[in-house]
Image (cartoon, rainbow, N blue to C red; front, side):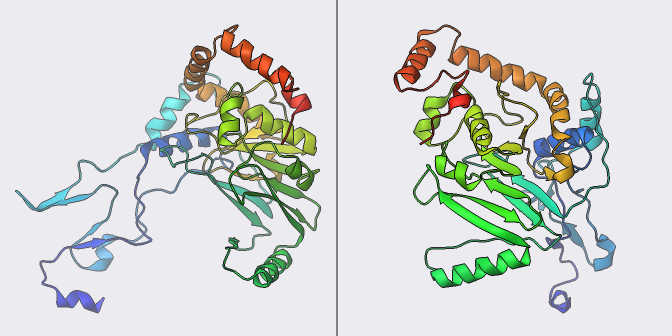
Length: 355
């Protein structure tokens, strides 16, 4: 670091590089620490915020950059650390430990030739607990590949790149279809040479074309932006409700259904519908799943309901206030669905009308 010699010996250096690990979202750390108690590998601990490199190794006066660290110029010059977020993982774990009947599933040796990592599971805007949707698929331990085909890229180049991607990841087939959201919205599916198939909806209303594209998928990842009872809002925003997403999975004959892209009103956990069964799972930020996890995930639902019981209760109260049982608005909604040839919500997923 020869450039440091150009500065006076009294200079203090602010170090900001890949070795810095600082807490920026305490609520996210808290949720992840508590989920980690339920399952060690599906909900891995977030990285510690301690640095890898000892400060003494620099041999100069230095300060590690931290989230919300401030340098005050006046009236007294110096560092201000009062706003730096701090988290105590032990306190978070202790709080969750006091919840009765909280299940802890022990980890096991997992085959990671196929792994799905949920980098974000929320919709619209990033919030404190759920980031905007982002899903990473790791195949055969090959470094992750991000495919982005822009409008200005010649079609032949895109085609050649996709063919190379298929060969590199031992994929037998890759399909896309247009879906009902904004212009140029697509869903996709891909099939591995070993036989498994993954279907991903992106943002969409229930869509027949996607049912065909994802037919007989091993894993369907489908958006479930809104809860049941908000079908009209889902149509306005061109999204799916929980039961609509599950219904698509049933039509598709998907072996497992993973719901994601939740409205940020369901920050910690979405509301469960009556259509949940052993094929249906819900996603969380930082969650990692592989084939062996598919069958264990339903066993985690009771623990998740216990951990977030207070939040679920509050959401159910809001739903009741928004749409009281027997209200004229609900009756008119059911009548409107009947007039359109659609089944009432209680059986809608059995005969889902897609567009």
